[in-house]
Length: 109
Image (cartoon, rainbow, N blue to C red; front, top):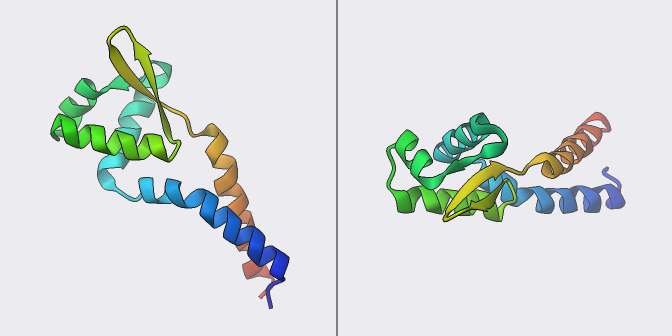
């Protein structure tokens, strides 16, 4: 049996990671993330991302909002444009913790 405290901790980790998993569960967002990562610290604006995806500007903006709300990208305003940069470093720790927690449960079965 799984320790009740371990269940609670793992459930909390799932809850913390859930928005990221939902945001990362779409092929269009995979492409956008890779394009943003490729840009480095400078990021990419919606126009650049629209050109690389063949999607409409509103569709790209929707996907960027999902990524932003999940804390995976952050908008940076430069002049009149908004550039999107990766902002996932602090989120990776939560994912690692969840994987370790699941691994511990599986190993104790």
